[in-house]
Length: 355
Image (cartoon, rainbow, N blue to C red):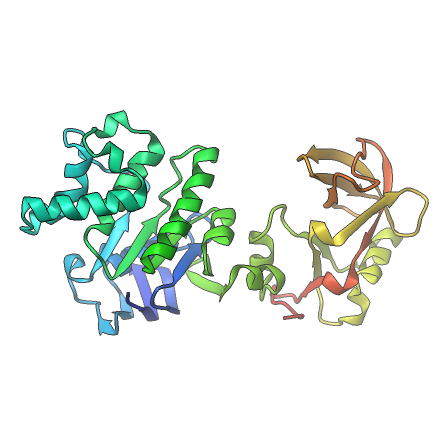
């Protein structure tokens, strides 16, 4: 196990800066997730760690050693890509043991290592088959196994589950979490899927435009985001947002701003509240009136989309299936109440005022 440190790490392609002097320490044995939208720099950072991209400036340390000028093969990093990249003419055993064969490991020792890793990945019964005979999930396990047999200092995963269907992605997330517990290895995992980030990462680094917005444990980022971007990116559905009322704004807009506590925070320019921190009631009580536009029935939960009257916004309210308003119908008039103590406030620069 080895820690990975990025010190003012920078990457530029000519005049275009894609990674802007980031600092990060991935602890030894940690499962760290890089998450963010496409083009934010997370994969480029992973490739710099792997040695597949050069470093423009700053320092990369792996296991305490400066790795900037090390060749990729010398860094002790094993990378698993989105594509399986298996040799179709080789058996699963030969695919997994290929790197060991190239390193001069004898056949008996290769077989021993491959069988041990295959048992860990629960594919030991597939070793004599070929990639075409396996499912997508099984092929991805083979790709992971090929990385494990090298006994690397750090595992690097570049969106390894993107090609799998939704059900298989869920089961593979469980397998990756189990694998991390069993190996105790340092793992860095890149994804644009915030659900993968929240469920897999011990800590998450949220990337945006070549910078890291925030690093922390999943629920820390969810409950105490430092920026409006982090608040909006993490969580399904997205956080509901309200702009400070401009002069001449509707009475409903002003009322909702007051109800959320915006008047007491002079620097606030936007307020945010998550769907589970809103209460939906039948029309007639106090609160902000609205009309139900759409209801997502999710079994035990419903996501009710409410068009707020007098406010240019549609908010989503999470309701349990046994709550009175859970059977809300399209076109129904309702009122909203927010839990003021769970409201987030952001300044004009998008920075949180309540961290």
